[in-house]
Image 1: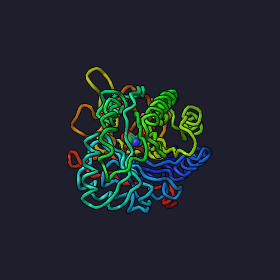
Image 2 (image 1 turned 90 degrees about the vertical axis):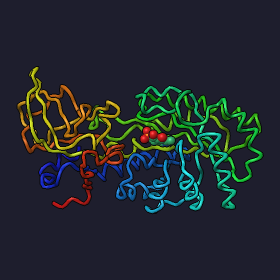
Image 3 (image 1 turned 30 degrees about the horizontal axis):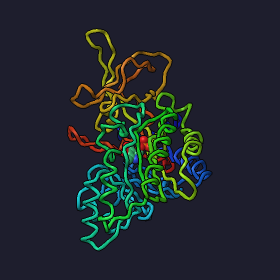
Image 4 (image 1 turned 120 degrees about the horizontal axis):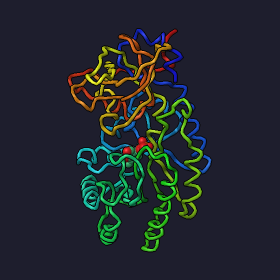
Amino acid sequence: MLSKTIADRLKGFETPFYLYDIDLLRRTLRACADESSRYGYRVHYAIKANYDPRILEEIRSFGLGIDAVSGNEVRRGIECGFPARDIVYAGVGKSDKEIRYSIEQDIFAFNCESFHELEIIDGIAADMGRKVRVALRINPDVDPKTHKYISTGQADSKFGISYTEIDRIRERMPQWKNIEIVGLHFHVGSQIVDLSVFAKLCERVNELWAWFADSGFRFSYVNVGGGLGINYGDPEGEPIPDFAGYFAVFREHLHLGPGVEVHFELGRSIVGQCGELISRVLFHKTTASGKRVAIVDASMTELLRPALYQARHAIENLSGGDKRETYIIGGTVCESSDIFARDLELPVLHRGDLVSLKSAGAYGAAMASTYNLHDLPGAVYSDRLTE
Ligand SMILES: Cc1ncc(COP(=O)(O)O)c(C=O)c1O
């Protein structure tokens, strides 16, 4: 990873901070853009994964749209130069203020997650004298085979409209004069590495699409969400996810007829591998049972994923060395879940050594908090490093 090759130049920065490899981000975006355009697919970047303006500037230059889940994410996209017509807005809870703002901006579509939400958006749009494009986010009841906290498309999840509600929506639709239902939206979960999950999703989309068509709906647009996973275990071995294989699954399994626009909402696969969290060793100690513990100056406030999802990020001692030892790597926060690794063998860690927590570009800085009154982590961009 980048940090190892420029370790000496990183020593002067205040830790912890995120290091972004802009060249890798560009190569990832190029792969995503090339493979999606092969089939005429359109990709929205899920801005929740990382909303750093410098990262967004790169993403915009490759022509991706934005997938937002809050009014402020819609705003960030617009402020960073993404055309409103390339923005979609999902999310189970949208406040009236967020809905109004997004209608004013004339975004491409709201991805609506309930009958109730459709009713409310129709009312607000009527109040504003506007007609609004919406897509129905249908819960496809597909098991994404990922961590339960990042699964969204199973029958009893809070996300999306249950297919048992669709009849009710169809009956009410003629009365909703201020919304135009332009398509269907799906998203089954995140960090999906088994591509057969997406094949299964396609089968469900085909079935639902046919059902809607039989019921008299003609849509021009389908959004199949995001979820493509990255290789956390071996980021050097697979720095760029398999976009070719991913889009090919949809090409092979999605059968919606001619002229239907197919959109995606990818987050992690675009920015995950280009970011590392660089931290410094503060202290070490030995537990009563003889385990070595290294405390680093990062914590769950800068990288929440390990504490939230039991996620594991590959860790490297940037100072190297031949002698090795097995460690528990702990953060500074007063929570026992604030552990980055257990039983991890690394070159012996000394106070002041820099360590890299890899594959942290997605859901890293974006989830940072000021818990324990920590400062928010800074960001260093590879193309702005001076010699
Ligand atoms: C509706 C929706 N779309 C897209 C994404 C992006 O997912 P990923 O980062 O796994 O591609 C998410 C993430 O949770 C989401 O909730």
